[in-house]
Image 1 (cartoon, rainbow, N blue to C red):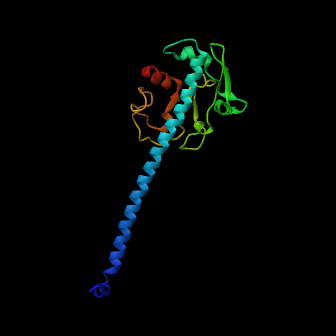
Image 2: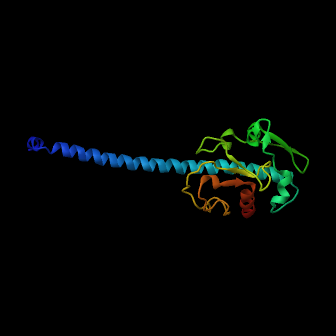
Image 3: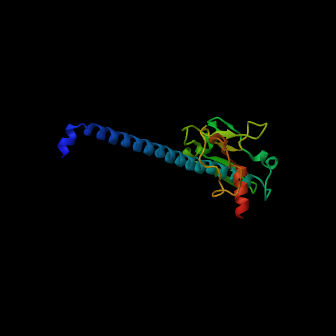
Length: 186
């Protein structure tokens, strides 16, 4: 019976149908692979940005004798300058940077090189500066222009500073984000 079906031209349409179905399935797999990759990069961006924000917050609390919630005006004297003989302040932090704390001790601040790189672009994070002063570092921001899947950070932070952003470049990891997180944990 099978030979008779082959003689009547059923094999070619069957093979074409199988190829079309396989193509659709591979397209679906490719799209879900792209989505999984983007979600993984988002998690890595959050992880790296959080490391920079934490280091900046530690530097400010080390340098300032003020306890409790800090304002931007209070921390301005303790922010690192952006420019550096090595490139940017992020390059300095990879090499390690020593600063004097308010209690008189010296502390070394250091970042892993990968913590300064945006996983989406493979380039160094954008630097976030205070309004009106581009010479100081408040934090870092992603440099990707894509639209994030993640819209709420309630599972990570008790802060709305990163919620509902339209692009990765709007995700700003600043010392203020860490201050709010740390203050709500205590």
